[in-house]
Structures are given as C-alpha cells and as structure tokens.
Length: 113
Length: 116
Image (cartoon, rainbow over all chains, first blue to last red; front, side, top):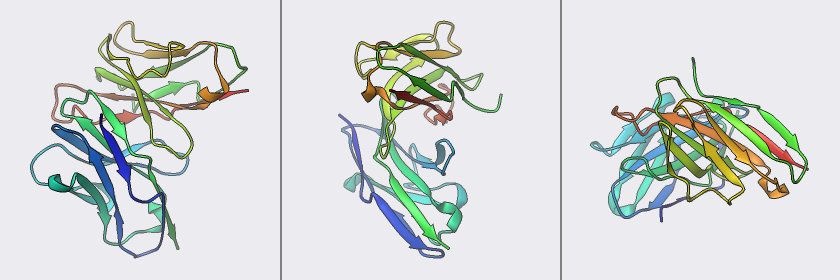
C-alpha cells in the first residue's frame, strides 16, 4: 500500500529564511507526486507536481521540488520565505493513472515577520 | 463555473441521523474524488468516480458511507446513522482524465460535519 511521510509537523522560520520540507513515500510502481498548500481558511491548492521528465520541478510562488527516485523523496524548497507563505503543506502521491491518491499528514509552516 | 463547489459548507447533526453532502465539480471534469480530513491530518481518500462509474469504493470507512454520481456530473456522499467519530471535513476534488494534467485534482472548500 502507498504511504507518505512528512518529516516535520511544524516548522517556524523568520522571513527571508530558506525552506526545505521533507517528503518520503513508499510505492512499488510508477508514481506521480504533488505538493498542495492550504492557506488559513482556504481550500487546498496545487503548488507543483511531478509526472515524468526533469526531476526538478518548479511551481507557483517560487517553490520547487526535487524528485529523487533512489531515495523515494520529493522535498519542497523555497530560497526565501515570506510571511504570506504561512500555511499547511501536504505532500501527496498517486499511482500512474491516479487510481490511488495518498496524502501525507502535512507540515504546518509559520513564518514570523 | 470557477471551481469545485460543495454544499452545505457546515452541517451539525445529532448522532444517529443521516446526512448527505453534495459536490459539483468543474463542469468539464470527468473524474470526481471524495476525501475526509480530520484535524491535524492530511486528506484521506474515500472513493472516486470516472463519469458515473464508481471505480474505487473499498476505502469508504464503513457500510454507513455511500456515494453516488448518477449522471456523471454532481455527486453526493451520504453517511447513515452518524457517529461522533464521523465529525470531520469532507472534501471533494475533480480532475479531467485524458489530458496531460489528468491527475491534477482541484479541491472544493469542503463540508464540515459536526456530530453531537
């Protein structure tokens, strides 16, 4: 069965600090990988996704993630966070054709002004 | 049509009552998913439809949970004989199979259920 783990439950950073949120998954086949964000009081939005090709993917708002197949990882990064990045971040994995979609438990990011 | 809509946004019910939630996906989307999200957790997949066919329902939490998508457009999720443990946010998402972005799901705002 697929599973997703996220390394940190809550991360607190100051503005302009660099961000890296860890995500590891377990699945024995071809996967699609996603990072979703949930801002306070809003619904889930897609930040970025990996289907195939270049393992370094760029998303919205300056976020990027790197798929390392050998490590079953898909870590999210941002070189300089802003207060407006305060949100809950979810890593997710699906099988190749989207039959099984599994979310991680989420990482709450608090950015201090 | 600007996104996925869900109704009602909040539902408070007494234990033992039945509840039904509605999801209207993005109009051209043919795949529709239901999730449950509890506090501090990520969304938990329940079931999904492609058009009107329910392709996966083994993850529905119990036989008290059922979902329909009779005409391949909107969907309903019903919980019978609600229990306090059913209190959660119920999320709906949709996607368009047959495009490069087929696996990109767009989420609605959710229905928050409180069972007293």
